[in-house]
Image (tube, rainbow, N blue to C red; front, side, top):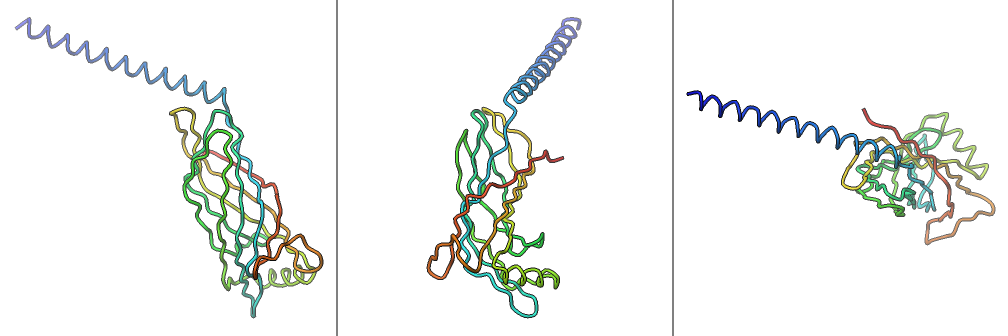
Length: 210
C-alpha cells in the first residue's frame, strides 16, 4: 500500500515539475518576443496615391453625384526585419468628409521586408445623394475648375517578426487629390476617361485594436 502511495506522489511531483517548466518556458518566450519587438519597433508603411483615372464625375438634379474612378495606390514596407499582413483594407472616395463611392475591399495581402505593393481598385458611386450645401460647394468647385477629393483606406493589419505574428492594428490612410476639370491639366485622355498622374503622399495612422 505504501509503495502505491509513493508512486502516486511521484507522479504528482512529476506533473508539477512539468507544469512549472512549461510555465517558465512561456514566460521566457514572452520576454524574448517583447524584447525583439521593442528592439525592432516597426515603422509604419508608406502610402502614395500614384494616379486617378476618372470615368464619370457629374451632378444631376436634384442633388445626385455619380463618380466612377480607378486609382493606383502604392504601399512600401520600410522595415528590414518586419513583414505586414493586411487582413482587411477598404478603399473609398469622399468629398468634404461625405463618402461618394462604395467601399472597395482589397484582397488580403502579405507585404515582406522592404517590399512594394501596388493596388488598382475601381471605386463606384452611382447617383449618390449629397447634402444640399455640399451640392452648392461642389458646383462652385467644378465651375472654378478644381475639386479636392480624398481617397481613404481603412482596415486592419498585423506585424510579422520571424514566426511571431502580432495582434490586430487599425490602419487609416488619407490621400488628398485635386482634380482639375477646366483649363490646362496634367491629365491624359484614355478613351473616354481622364487619367491624372499624381504621386501624392498619403497620411497614415496606426493604432492597436482593443
